[in-house]
Amino acid sequence: MKVALIGATGKAGSRVLAELVQRGHAVTAIVRHPENVETSDKVAAHGVDGSKQALVDAIRGHDAVVSSVRFVDLDPDILVPAVQESGVKRYLVVGGAGSLLHPDGTQEVDQPGFPDVAKPNSNRGTDLLNLLKASSDLDWTFISPPRMFIPGERTGEFRYGKDHMLMKDDQPTSISFEDFAIALVDEMEKPERVRERFTVGY
Image (tube, rainbow, N blue to C red; front, top):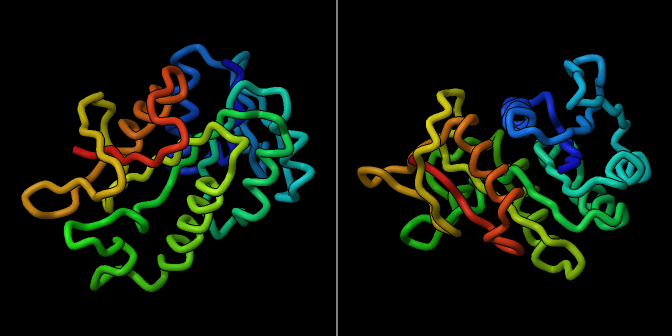
């Protein structure tokens, strides 16, 4: 497939890029600083300034688009319309954990001890998810990591959930960037959760 990857140099985005390339997909890495992208016969770098039209032009003509950017760094009110206007229907989002539900029904972002510094990004992530739920023209999937989203190993062994935080020993579990990338690319290649949010964790 020909994939547009927004945020290809980030912690999660770089692992998604590696996973896509390993599986033989052609990737356009859409970033603010294209000089930071290691290009190859499978990877082309495309610099954008964050404006909607620049994103539309960069995304158009691909089979799928993946966004892996902090929600406070690229406004969902720009990002989602840009994907819609590009004409690309398949859209996968590296989501946040903030909107995942705990067993008592409260969101992760509302849990005691949730860092205040992280709340604006989490709330923007919820905004983006709500925009997708309200859309009718995108085959979207929003993939939330659990609380601990960290560098690690590519094991291919993890669990799936939907809207609730996956727990282990009554505590939120974790996922490596590498295994998260497997789950995302699996869903891109063989869609099973279109117009849904899901989560993965150990």
